[in-house]
Length: 230
Length: 230
DNA sequence: TCAAAAGTGTTCATCCTACACCCATGC
DNA sequence: GCATGGGTGTAGGATGAACACTTTTGA
Image 1 (cartoon, protein in one colour):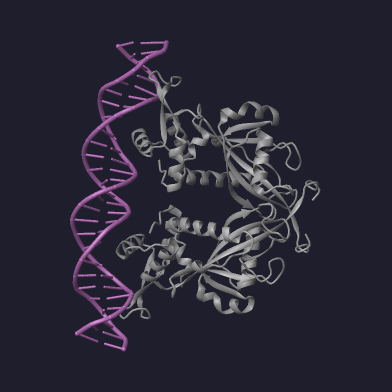
Image 2: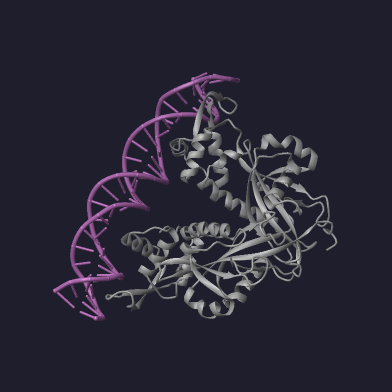
Protein backbone atom coordinates (compact mmCIF):
# COMPACT_ATOMS: atom_id res chain seq x y z
CA UNK A 1 0.00 0.00 0.00
CA UNK A 2 2.76 2.40 0.88
CA UNK A 3 4.62 2.48 -2.42
CA UNK A 4 2.03 3.95 -4.74
CA UNK A 5 -0.12 5.86 -2.31
CA UNK A 6 0.28 9.19 -4.04
CA UNK A 7 -1.58 7.96 -7.10
CA UNK A 8 -5.30 8.14 -7.68
CA UNK A 9 -7.60 5.17 -7.42
CA UNK A 10 -10.56 4.15 -9.53
CA UNK A 11 -13.67 2.06 -9.50
CA UNK A 12 -13.14 -0.98 -11.68
CA UNK A 13 -16.13 -2.80 -13.11
CA UNK A 14 -16.48 -6.00 -15.07
CA UNK A 15 -19.15 -6.15 -17.76
CA UNK A 16 -19.99 -9.33 -19.63
CA UNK A 17 -21.36 -9.78 -23.10
CA UNK A 18 -23.15 -13.09 -22.89
CA UNK A 19 -23.97 -14.85 -26.12
CA UNK A 20 -26.48 -17.63 -26.51
CA UNK A 21 -27.76 -19.32 -29.63
CA UNK A 22 -31.48 -19.66 -30.17
CA UNK A 23 -32.15 -22.66 -32.37
CA UNK A 24 -35.73 -21.72 -33.13
CA UNK A 25 -34.89 -18.30 -34.45
CA UNK A 26 -31.50 -19.43 -35.70
CA UNK A 27 -30.01 -16.33 -34.26
CA UNK A 28 -27.46 -15.21 -31.74
CA UNK A 29 -29.00 -13.80 -28.59
CA UNK A 30 -27.66 -11.60 -25.86
CA UNK A 31 -28.47 -11.89 -22.20
CA UNK A 32 -29.50 -8.43 -21.09
CA UNK A 33 -31.10 -7.02 -18.00
CA UNK A 34 -32.84 -3.95 -16.80
CA UNK A 35 -30.82 -2.04 -14.28
CA UNK A 36 -32.43 -1.93 -10.89
CA UNK A 37 -30.19 0.79 -9.48
CA UNK A 38 -29.18 4.31 -10.33
CA UNK A 39 -27.95 5.80 -12.57
CA UNK A 40 -29.89 4.77 -15.66
CA UNK A 41 -32.26 2.64 -13.60
CA UNK A 42 -34.76 0.79 -15.76
CA UNK A 43 -32.66 0.86 -18.91
CA UNK A 44 -31.16 -2.12 -20.70
CA UNK A 45 -27.68 -3.07 -19.70
CA UNK A 46 -25.09 -5.77 -19.92
CA UNK A 47 -24.42 -7.83 -16.86
CA UNK A 48 -21.81 -6.26 -14.71
CA UNK A 49 -20.51 -5.69 -11.26
CA UNK A 50 -17.62 -4.19 -9.38
CA UNK A 51 -14.24 -5.68 -8.84
CA UNK A 52 -13.45 -6.51 -5.25
CA UNK A 53 -10.20 -6.28 -3.40
CA UNK A 54 -9.85 -9.97 -2.75
CA UNK A 55 -10.27 -11.29 -6.26
CA UNK A 56 -8.47 -11.22 -9.59
CA UNK A 57 -10.23 -9.76 -12.60
CA UNK A 58 -10.91 -13.12 -14.24
CA UNK A 59 -12.32 -14.35 -10.97
CA UNK A 60 -14.56 -11.34 -10.72
CA UNK A 61 -15.94 -11.97 -14.18
CA UNK A 62 -16.77 -15.55 -13.24
CA UNK A 63 -18.26 -14.55 -9.91
CA UNK A 64 -20.54 -11.96 -11.46
CA UNK A 65 -21.70 -14.32 -14.18
CA UNK A 66 -22.38 -16.97 -11.62
CA UNK A 67 -24.27 -14.63 -9.34
CA UNK A 68 -26.56 -13.55 -12.11
CA UNK A 69 -27.05 -16.83 -13.93
CA UNK A 70 -26.14 -19.60 -11.54
CA UNK A 71 -23.79 -20.98 -14.18
CA UNK A 72 -20.18 -21.88 -13.81
CA UNK A 73 -17.72 -23.61 -16.12
CA UNK A 74 -18.59 -21.23 -18.89
CA UNK A 75 -16.37 -20.20 -21.78
CA UNK A 76 -15.21 -16.68 -20.96
CA UNK A 77 -12.56 -14.52 -22.48
CA UNK A 78 -11.43 -11.01 -21.74
CA UNK A 79 -12.50 -8.67 -24.51
CA UNK A 80 -11.27 -5.14 -23.95
CA UNK A 81 -11.07 -2.44 -21.32
CA UNK A 82 -13.13 0.69 -21.64
CA UNK A 83 -11.77 3.69 -19.86
CA UNK A 84 -13.00 6.85 -21.50
CA UNK A 85 -13.47 9.72 -19.12
CA UNK A 86 -17.22 10.06 -19.16
CA UNK A 87 -18.40 6.66 -20.23
CA UNK A 88 -20.48 6.31 -17.07
CA UNK A 89 -22.21 9.51 -16.04
CA UNK A 90 -22.45 8.30 -12.45
CA UNK A 91 -18.74 8.27 -11.78
CA UNK A 92 -15.37 7.57 -13.29
CA UNK A 93 -15.40 3.83 -13.89
CA UNK A 94 -12.94 1.66 -15.73
CA UNK A 95 -14.78 -1.30 -17.18
CA UNK A 96 -13.07 -4.50 -18.19
CA UNK A 97 -15.35 -6.31 -20.59
CA UNK A 98 -15.56 -10.08 -21.00
CA UNK A 99 -17.55 -12.16 -23.40
CA UNK A 100 -19.13 -15.47 -22.53
CA UNK A 101 -20.69 -18.26 -24.54
CA UNK A 102 -23.43 -20.27 -22.92
CA UNK A 103 -26.01 -22.85 -23.89
CA UNK A 104 -29.37 -21.17 -23.64
CA UNK A 105 -31.27 -24.22 -22.52
CA UNK A 106 -28.99 -24.93 -19.60
CA UNK A 107 -29.54 -21.48 -18.27
CA UNK A 108 -32.79 -19.77 -18.90
CA UNK A 109 -34.97 -21.41 -16.34
CA UNK A 110 -33.51 -19.93 -13.21
CA UNK A 111 -32.12 -16.72 -14.34
CA UNK A 112 -34.89 -15.18 -16.30
CA UNK A 113 -36.97 -15.45 -13.20
CA UNK A 114 -34.53 -14.44 -10.53
CA UNK A 115 -32.85 -11.42 -12.01
CA UNK A 116 -35.08 -10.13 -14.71
CA UNK A 117 -32.51 -11.12 -17.29
CA UNK A 118 -33.80 -11.67 -20.81
CA UNK A 119 -32.51 -13.30 -23.96
CA UNK A 120 -32.78 -10.86 -26.81
CA UNK A 121 -31.84 -11.54 -30.45
CA UNK A 122 -28.97 -9.42 -31.64
CA UNK A 123 -31.07 -8.20 -34.51
CA UNK A 124 -33.56 -6.76 -32.02
CA UNK A 125 -31.10 -5.39 -29.52
CA UNK A 126 -32.46 -2.33 -27.75
CA UNK A 127 -30.40 0.70 -27.01
CA UNK A 128 -28.05 -0.06 -24.14
CA UNK A 129 -26.71 2.23 -21.47
CA UNK A 130 -23.38 4.02 -21.65
CA UNK A 131 -20.97 2.40 -24.08
CA UNK A 132 -22.46 -1.06 -23.79
CA UNK A 133 -23.53 -1.12 -27.42
CA UNK A 134 -19.94 -0.53 -28.45
CA UNK A 135 -18.92 -3.41 -26.21
CA UNK A 136 -21.37 -5.70 -27.93
CA UNK A 137 -20.13 -4.67 -31.32
CA UNK A 138 -16.56 -5.40 -30.37
CA UNK A 139 -17.55 -8.72 -28.82
CA UNK A 140 -19.33 -9.78 -31.95
CA UNK A 141 -16.29 -9.07 -34.07
CA UNK A 142 -14.08 -10.99 -31.69
CA UNK A 143 -16.49 -13.90 -31.72
CA UNK A 144 -16.31 -13.98 -35.50
CA UNK A 145 -12.54 -14.00 -35.37
CA UNK A 146 -12.41 -16.67 -32.68
CA UNK A 147 -14.84 -18.88 -34.55
CA UNK A 148 -12.33 -19.09 -37.39
CA UNK A 149 -9.39 -20.00 -35.22
CA UNK A 150 -10.83 -22.08 -32.41
CA UNK A 151 -13.70 -24.53 -32.25
CA UNK A 152 -15.72 -22.45 -29.82
CA UNK A 153 -18.99 -22.81 -31.63
CA UNK A 154 -19.66 -25.94 -29.65
CA UNK A 155 -19.82 -23.89 -26.47
CA UNK A 156 -23.12 -22.53 -27.69
CA UNK A 157 -24.79 -25.87 -28.45
CA UNK A 158 -25.91 -28.77 -26.28
CA UNK A 159 -23.53 -31.69 -25.89
CA UNK A 160 -25.38 -33.62 -28.57
CA UNK A 161 -26.01 -31.68 -31.74
CA UNK A 162 -26.56 -32.28 -35.42
CA UNK A 163 -24.53 -30.92 -38.28
CA UNK A 164 -27.39 -28.79 -39.59
CA UNK A 165 -27.70 -27.27 -36.12
CA UNK A 166 -24.01 -26.43 -36.06
CA UNK A 167 -24.26 -24.94 -39.52
CA UNK A 168 -27.17 -22.79 -38.41
CA UNK A 169 -25.04 -21.49 -35.57
CA UNK A 170 -22.16 -20.57 -37.82
CA UNK A 171 -24.52 -18.89 -40.22
CA UNK A 172 -25.77 -16.83 -37.29
CA UNK A 173 -22.26 -15.92 -36.18
CA UNK A 174 -21.16 -14.86 -39.65
CA UNK A 175 -24.53 -13.50 -40.73
CA UNK A 176 -24.39 -15.35 -43.99
CA UNK A 177 -25.55 -18.62 -45.44
CA UNK A 178 -23.08 -21.40 -46.00
CA UNK A 179 -23.11 -24.23 -48.48
CA UNK A 180 -24.08 -27.37 -46.62
CA UNK A 181 -21.92 -29.70 -48.68
CA UNK A 182 -18.81 -27.62 -48.19
CA UNK A 183 -19.61 -27.08 -44.53
CA UNK A 184 -20.03 -30.76 -43.83
CA UNK A 185 -16.92 -31.74 -45.73
CA UNK A 186 -14.65 -29.25 -44.04
CA UNK A 187 -16.09 -29.96 -40.64
CA UNK A 188 -15.72 -33.71 -40.85
CA UNK A 189 -12.25 -33.39 -42.34
CA UNK A 190 -11.15 -31.90 -39.01
CA UNK A 191 -11.97 -35.19 -37.39
CA UNK A 192 -13.27 -33.62 -34.21
CA UNK A 193 -16.67 -35.22 -33.95
CA UNK A 194 -17.96 -38.53 -32.84
CA UNK A 195 -21.10 -39.73 -34.57
CA UNK A 196 -23.77 -41.12 -32.26
CA UNK A 197 -26.25 -43.86 -33.10
CA UNK A 198 -29.15 -41.54 -32.52
CA UNK A 199 -31.15 -39.17 -34.63
CA UNK A 200 -32.72 -35.82 -33.95
CA UNK A 201 -36.28 -36.10 -35.27
CA UNK A 202 -37.87 -32.82 -34.23
CA UNK A 203 -36.95 -30.71 -37.16
CA UNK A 204 -37.27 -33.12 -40.05
CA UNK A 205 -38.97 -36.34 -41.09
CA UNK A 206 -35.78 -37.97 -42.11
CA UNK A 207 -33.92 -37.04 -38.98
CA UNK A 208 -30.34 -35.85 -38.60
CA UNK A 209 -27.64 -37.81 -36.87
CA UNK A 210 -26.43 -36.53 -33.55
CA UNK A 211 -22.75 -35.83 -33.11
CA UNK A 212 -20.63 -35.11 -30.08
CA UNK A 213 -17.15 -33.79 -29.45
CA UNK A 214 -14.32 -36.10 -29.08
CA UNK A 215 -12.49 -34.30 -26.29
CA UNK A 216 -9.20 -36.01 -27.05
CA UNK A 217 -9.08 -35.08 -30.70
CA UNK A 218 -10.11 -31.60 -29.68
CA UNK A 219 -7.12 -31.25 -27.39
CA UNK A 220 -4.77 -32.62 -30.00
CA UNK A 221 -5.95 -30.14 -32.55
CA UNK A 222 -5.78 -27.20 -30.16
CA UNK A 223 -2.16 -27.97 -29.47
CA UNK A 224 -1.35 -28.16 -33.13
CA UNK A 225 -2.90 -24.72 -33.61
CA UNK A 226 -5.09 -25.60 -36.52
CA UNK A 227 -7.37 -23.55 -38.68
CA UNK A 228 -11.07 -23.69 -38.13
CA UNK A 229 -12.42 -21.88 -41.11
CA UNK A 230 -15.97 -22.88 -41.95
CA UNK B 1 -19.19 10.00 -6.97
CA UNK B 2 -22.21 9.31 -4.86
CA UNK B 3 -23.71 6.40 -6.74
CA UNK B 4 -20.98 3.83 -6.41
CA UNK B 5 -19.24 4.99 -3.28
CA UNK B 6 -19.66 1.75 -1.41
CA UNK B 7 -17.37 -0.07 -3.87
CA UNK B 8 -13.65 -0.42 -3.58
CA UNK B 9 -11.19 1.53 -5.68
CA UNK B 10 -7.95 0.48 -7.31
CA UNK B 11 -4.76 1.82 -8.69
CA UNK B 12 -4.82 1.56 -12.47
CA UNK B 13 -1.59 1.50 -14.41
CA UNK B 14 -0.81 1.58 -18.10
CA UNK B 15 2.16 -0.45 -19.31
CA UNK B 16 3.42 -0.29 -22.88
CA UNK B 17 5.18 -2.90 -24.91
CA UNK B 18 7.14 -0.85 -27.40
CA UNK B 19 8.43 -2.59 -30.48
CA UNK B 20 11.11 -1.29 -32.75
CA UNK B 21 12.86 -2.93 -35.67
CA UNK B 22 16.61 -2.99 -35.81
CA UNK B 23 17.74 -3.22 -39.40
CA UNK B 24 21.31 -4.14 -38.58
CA UNK B 25 20.40 -7.12 -36.48
CA UNK B 26 17.26 -7.80 -38.51
CA UNK B 27 15.43 -8.31 -35.28
CA UNK B 28 12.54 -6.92 -33.31
CA UNK B 29 13.62 -4.92 -30.32
CA UNK B 30 11.85 -3.86 -27.18
CA UNK B 31 12.25 -0.57 -25.43
CA UNK B 32 12.93 -1.39 -21.80
CA UNK B 33 14.07 0.55 -18.82
CA UNK B 34 15.48 0.06 -15.38
CA UNK B 35 13.05 1.05 -12.69
CA UNK B 36 14.26 3.96 -10.66
CA UNK B 37 11.71 3.55 -7.88
CA UNK B 38 10.56 0.88 -5.48
CA UNK B 39 9.53 -1.87 -5.51
CA UNK B 40 11.87 -3.79 -7.78
CA UNK B 41 14.11 -0.78 -8.21
CA UNK B 42 16.95 -1.45 -10.64
CA UNK B 43 15.22 -4.30 -12.44
CA UNK B 44 14.13 -4.31 -16.07
CA UNK B 45 10.63 -3.19 -16.75
CA UNK B 46 8.26 -2.10 -19.45
CA UNK B 47 7.37 1.53 -19.66
CA UNK B 48 4.45 2.37 -17.53
CA UNK B 49 2.71 4.88 -15.38
CA UNK B 50 -0.44 5.50 -13.45
CA UNK B 51 -3.76 6.55 -14.83
CA UNK B 52 -4.92 9.96 -13.73
CA UNK B 53 -8.36 11.21 -12.95
CA UNK B 54 -8.55 13.67 -15.78
CA UNK B 55 -7.62 11.44 -18.70
CA UNK B 56 -9.02 8.47 -20.57
CA UNK B 57 -7.04 5.26 -20.71
CA UNK B 58 -5.97 5.70 -24.33
CA UNK B 59 -4.87 9.21 -23.49
CA UNK B 60 -2.88 7.96 -20.56
CA UNK B 61 -1.07 5.45 -22.75
CA UNK B 62 -0.13 8.19 -25.18
CA UNK B 63 0.91 10.56 -22.44
CA UNK B 64 3.17 8.04 -20.79
CA UNK B 65 4.78 7.07 -24.07
CA UNK B 66 5.32 10.70 -24.89
CA UNK B 67 6.80 11.51 -21.50
CA UNK B 68 9.31 8.73 -21.76
CA UNK B 69 10.21 8.98 -25.43
CA UNK B 70 9.21 12.40 -26.63
CA UNK B 71 7.29 10.75 -29.45
CA UNK B 72 3.70 11.29 -30.42
CA UNK B 73 1.64 10.12 -33.38
CA UNK B 74 2.67 6.57 -32.72
CA UNK B 75 0.73 3.45 -33.61
CA UNK B 76 -0.73 2.18 -30.34
CA UNK B 77 -3.30 -0.41 -29.61
CA UNK B 78 -4.72 -1.71 -26.39
CA UNK B 79 -3.50 -5.22 -25.73
CA UNK B 80 -5.02 -6.71 -22.61
CA UNK B 81 -5.68 -5.93 -18.97
CA UNK B 82 -3.80 -7.73 -16.27
CA UNK B 83 -5.55 -7.92 -12.96
CA UNK B 84 -4.34 -10.90 -11.01
CA UNK B 85 -4.32 -10.38 -7.28
CA UNK B 86 -0.62 -10.36 -6.59
CA UNK B 87 0.86 -9.40 -9.88
CA UNK B 88 2.59 -6.41 -8.28
CA UNK B 89 3.99 -7.13 -4.85
CA UNK B 90 3.91 -3.45 -3.95
CA UNK B 91 0.14 -3.09 -4.04
CA UNK B 92 -2.98 -4.19 -5.83
CA UNK B 93 -2.63 -2.72 -9.29
CA UNK B 94 -4.72 -3.27 -12.38
CA UNK B 95 -2.55 -2.82 -15.42
CA UNK B 96 -3.92 -2.06 -18.84
CA UNK B 97 -1.27 -2.99 -21.37
CA UNK B 98 -0.78 -1.32 -24.75
CA UNK B 99 1.59 -2.12 -27.51
CA UNK B 100 3.26 0.46 -29.68
CA UNK B 101 5.22 0.35 -32.92
CA UNK B 102 7.88 2.96 -33.47
CA UNK B 103 10.70 3.68 -35.83
CA UNK B 104 13.90 3.18 -33.91
CA UNK B 105 15.87 5.85 -35.69
CA UNK B 106 13.32 8.54 -35.04
CA UNK B 107 13.53 7.85 -31.36
CA UNK B 108 16.71 6.66 -29.89
CA UNK B 109 18.63 9.84 -29.65
CA UNK B 110 16.73 11.61 -26.93
CA UNK B 111 15.29 8.82 -24.97
CA UNK B 112 18.17 6.57 -24.38
CA UNK B 113 19.86 9.50 -22.73
CA UNK B 114 17.07 11.03 -20.77
CA UNK B 115 15.38 8.07 -19.19
CA UNK B 116 17.82 5.24 -19.26
CA UNK B 117 15.65 3.41 -21.74
CA UNK B 118 17.36 0.83 -23.90
CA UNK B 119 16.54 -1.04 -27.07
CA UNK B 120 16.98 -4.73 -26.46
CA UNK B 121 16.52 -7.50 -29.03
CA UNK B 122 13.66 -9.82 -28.20
CA UNK B 123 16.00 -12.76 -28.41
CA UNK B 124 18.10 -11.26 -25.63
CA UNK B 125 15.28 -10.04 -23.45
CA UNK B 126 16.25 -10.06 -19.79
CA UNK B 127 13.93 -11.17 -17.05
CA UNK B 128 11.33 -8.51 -16.48
CA UNK B 129 9.53 -7.53 -13.30
CA UNK B 130 6.14 -8.86 -12.28
CA UNK B 131 4.12 -10.23 -15.20
CA UNK B 132 5.79 -8.03 -17.79
CA UNK B 133 7.27 -11.00 -19.60
CA UNK B 134 3.80 -12.42 -20.06
CA UNK B 135 2.71 -9.07 -21.42
CA UNK B 136 5.49 -9.14 -23.99
CA UNK B 137 4.58 -12.63 -25.02
CA UNK B 138 0.97 -11.66 -25.56
CA UNK B 139 1.98 -8.53 -27.44
CA UNK B 140 4.18 -10.50 -29.77
CA UNK B 141 1.35 -12.86 -30.63
CA UNK B 142 -0.98 -9.98 -31.25
CA UNK B 143 1.59 -8.29 -33.45
CA UNK B 144 1.86 -11.45 -35.52
CA UNK B 145 -1.90 -11.58 -35.92
CA UNK B 146 -2.16 -7.88 -36.76
CA UNK B 147 0.58 -8.14 -39.33
CA UNK B 148 -1.57 -10.57 -41.28
CA UNK B 149 -4.68 -8.42 -41.26
CA UNK B 150 -3.43 -4.86 -41.37
CA UNK B 151 -0.45 -3.25 -43.04
CA UNK B 152 1.13 -2.18 -39.76
CA UNK B 153 4.62 -3.32 -40.63
CA UNK B 154 5.26 0.07 -42.16
CA UNK B 155 4.92 1.67 -38.75
CA UNK B 156 8.24 0.11 -37.89
CA UNK B 157 10.19 1.37 -40.90
CA UNK B 158 11.24 4.81 -42.08
CA UNK B 159 9.04 6.53 -44.62
CA UNK B 160 11.29 5.42 -47.44
CA UNK B 161 12.15 1.76 -47.37
CA UNK B 162 13.18 -0.99 -49.73
CA UNK B 163 11.41 -4.26 -50.32
CA UNK B 164 14.25 -6.33 -48.89
CA UNK B 165 14.05 -4.19 -45.75
CA UNK B 166 10.34 -4.82 -45.44
CA UNK B 167 10.87 -8.51 -45.96
CA UNK B 168 13.50 -8.55 -43.22
CA UNK B 169 10.97 -6.97 -40.89
CA UNK B 170 8.31 -9.55 -41.62
CA UNK B 171 10.82 -12.31 -41.19
CA UNK B 172 11.60 -10.87 -37.79
CA UNK B 173 7.93 -10.62 -36.84
CA UNK B 174 7.16 -14.18 -37.88
CA UNK B 175 10.55 -15.61 -36.92
CA UNK B 176 10.92 -17.38 -40.20
CA UNK B 177 12.45 -16.78 -43.57
CA UNK B 178 10.24 -15.94 -46.52
CA UNK B 179 10.72 -16.52 -50.22
CA UNK B 180 11.68 -13.22 -51.77
CA UNK B 181 9.93 -13.82 -55.07
CA UNK B 182 6.64 -14.71 -53.43
CA UNK B 183 6.98 -11.87 -50.95
CA UNK B 184 7.54 -9.30 -53.62
CA UNK B 185 4.76 -10.58 -55.82
CA UNK B 186 2.14 -10.61 -53.08
CA UNK B 187 3.23 -7.27 -51.73
CA UNK B 188 3.14 -5.47 -55.05
CA UNK B 189 -0.15 -7.12 -55.96
CA UNK B 190 -1.74 -5.20 -53.09
CA UNK B 191 -0.90 -2.03 -54.95
CA UNK B 192 -0.08 -0.09 -51.80
CA UNK B 193 3.36 1.20 -52.61
CA UNK B 194 4.75 3.97 -54.68
CA UNK B 195 8.13 3.35 -56.24
CA UNK B 196 10.60 6.19 -55.87
CA UNK B 197 13.33 7.09 -58.34
CA UNK B 198 15.99 6.56 -55.76
CA UNK B 199 18.05 3.64 -54.62
CA UNK B 200 19.32 2.52 -51.27
CA UNK B 201 23.01 1.78 -51.77
CA UNK B 202 24.27 1.03 -48.29
CA UNK B 203 23.59 -2.63 -48.14
CA UNK B 204 24.41 -3.76 -51.65
CA UNK B 205 26.37 -2.81 -54.71
CA UNK B 206 23.44 -2.96 -57.03
CA UNK B 207 21.18 -0.95 -54.80
CA UNK B 208 17.52 -1.50 -53.99
CA UNK B 209 14.74 0.80 -55.06
CA UNK B 210 13.09 2.84 -52.36
CA UNK B 211 9.34 2.62 -51.97
CA UNK B 212 6.85 4.65 -50.03
CA UNK B 213 3.26 4.27 -49.01
CA UNK B 214 0.54 5.65 -51.11
CA UNK B 215 -1.69 6.92 -48.34
CA UNK B 216 -4.77 6.97 -50.55
CA UNK B 217 -4.52 3.38 -51.67
CA UNK B 218 -3.85 2.48 -48.06
CA UNK B 219 -7.12 4.02 -46.93
CA UNK B 220 -9.05 2.39 -49.72
CA UNK B 221 -7.76 -1.01 -48.82
CA UNK B 222 -8.37 -0.55 -45.11
CA UNK B 223 -12.00 0.21 -45.79
CA UNK B 224 -12.40 -2.85 -47.94
CA UNK B 225 -11.00 -4.95 -45.12
CA UNK B 226 -8.46 -6.82 -47.14
CA UNK B 227 -6.10 -9.58 -46.29
CA UNK B 228 -2.45 -8.82 -45.69
CA UNK B 229 -0.89 -12.23 -45.58
CA UNK B 230 2.76 -12.19 -46.45
C1' DT C 1 -47.81 -39.29 -52.65
C1' DC C 2 -45.86 -35.30 -51.30
C1' DA C 3 -43.56 -31.99 -48.57
C1' DA C 4 -39.40 -30.93 -46.03
C1' DA C 5 -35.05 -31.33 -44.46
C1' DA C 6 -30.83 -34.58 -44.68
C1' DG C 7 -27.31 -36.17 -47.09
C1' DT C 8 -23.91 -36.78 -50.99
C1' DG C 9 -19.45 -35.61 -55.46
C1' DT C 10 -17.47 -33.24 -59.02
C1' DT C 11 -15.57 -29.47 -61.60
C1' DC C 12 -13.24 -25.25 -62.12
C1' DA C 13 -10.69 -21.36 -60.80
C1' DT C 14 -7.62 -19.52 -57.65
C1' DC C 15 -3.98 -19.24 -54.69
C1' DC C 16 0.23 -20.83 -52.55
C1' DT C 17 4.67 -22.97 -52.76
C1' DA C 18 8.83 -24.35 -54.35
C1' DC C 19 12.56 -23.42 -56.96
C1' DA C 20 17.36 -21.24 -60.05
C1' DC C 21 19.35 -17.96 -62.65
C1' DC C 22 20.74 -13.24 -64.35
C1' DC C 23 21.68 -8.23 -63.07
C1' DA C 24 24.09 -4.21 -61.52
C1' DT C 25 27.79 -2.40 -59.18
C1' DG C 26 31.94 -1.25 -56.15
C1' DC C 27 36.01 -2.93 -54.98
C1' DG D 1 36.63 -10.13 -62.71
C1' DC D 2 34.40 -11.33 -58.81
C1' DA D 3 31.69 -11.07 -54.80
C1' DT D 4 27.32 -9.35 -53.01
C1' DG D 5 22.72 -8.64 -52.55
C1' DG D 6 18.69 -7.22 -55.94
C1' DG D 7 15.58 -8.70 -59.00
C1' DT D 8 12.65 -11.91 -62.05
C1' DG D 9 8.96 -16.37 -63.95
C1' DT D 10 6.91 -20.78 -64.04
C1' DA D 11 4.89 -25.21 -63.12
C1' DG D 12 2.38 -28.40 -59.95
C1' DG D 13 -0.43 -29.12 -56.03
C1' DA D 14 -3.73 -27.76 -52.82
C1' DT D 15 -7.54 -25.38 -51.50
C1' DG D 16 -12.04 -23.10 -51.78
C1' DA D 17 -16.42 -22.05 -54.27
C1' DA D 18 -20.18 -23.22 -56.96
C1' DC D 19 -23.63 -26.25 -58.04
C1' DA D 20 -28.33 -30.37 -58.30
C1' DC D 21 -30.11 -34.44 -57.28
C1' DT D 22 -31.45 -38.49 -54.24
C1' DT D 23 -33.02 -40.20 -49.65
C1' DT D 24 -35.98 -40.73 -45.78
C1' DT D 25 -40.21 -40.64 -43.51
C1' DG D 26 -44.37 -38.60 -41.18
C1' DA D 27 -48.53 -36.77 -42.33
